[in-house]
Image (cartoon, rainbow, N blue to C red; front, side, top):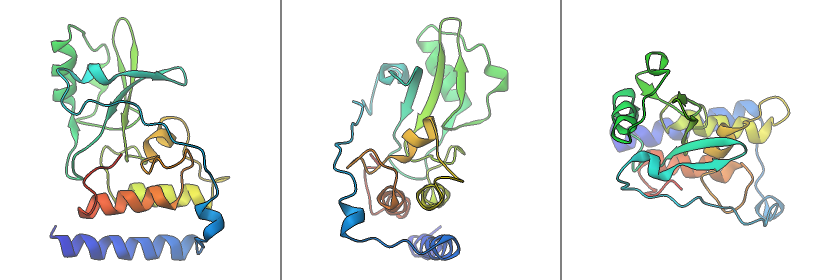
Length: 184
């Protein structure tokens, strides 16, 4: 899709999302709501193997990915080849989908890995406007639509604080149309 088409799609979706959910009022109180420093896990964009970026958090062994652009996805074949390169056999290989997404469980003899794609808050394997929509729904309707666990970690792309808010959604939209070169 051409850039102008993406911009129109994003603008329309943002208006529809905010308009149908509730008007989100961003004021100085919202901007200053949290002054807690966010923590960005060290990430090597060109590792010898994807397992070099693995880290432990909240009792999970997390296999993280940060996309360079919104057209990128992770294939099952790529994951299998990287684990094989590291000398590991994936036990649940037949149950993996062709497109790997946030929340995908990869099981080996020794560990269970949880895939984390920063920005993939809805768990479909893509970083797109639907992730921004999921974040807005979380922000407005946290009691009825809360991003939990690995999806909460995936949604925090702004990293100015630890809260999932409109700034995370905005960053994903800017990344999607090509105005952000780094998602995290």
